Length: 146
Image (tube, rainbow, N blue to C red; front, top):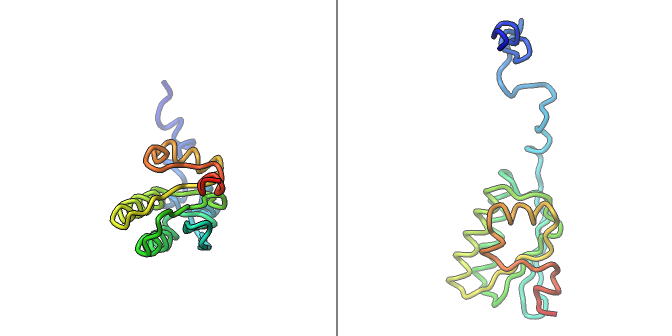
């Protein structure tokens, strides 16, 4: 086993200029945690409300996502299809918004279907087991029953 002082420069514990954790000039993930934008489209199609978010659903956009979903559920459509084709990523706060929308949909009698998830979203839905909570359709047309 190596002595701690011998490996400490590798760990960064004894730098000549100590720095605060996470305050690196070129932080590896800083670009993915800031500047997110969420676009939103909604339309009626074949008797269902089609909700189409676009972008990342993360800490900075989850509240807007939640509000859009809850507003749509309050309108009480028979079916609400959430088209995930243009959603790049969804954090746990985005998943929580889906949970809140599901609860609201039970009050209004709305059936929520998730449609067109890309590979990233399929993985997120599978890991979180949301693919067991919601019906997931490969396409919007499949969600509409065509």
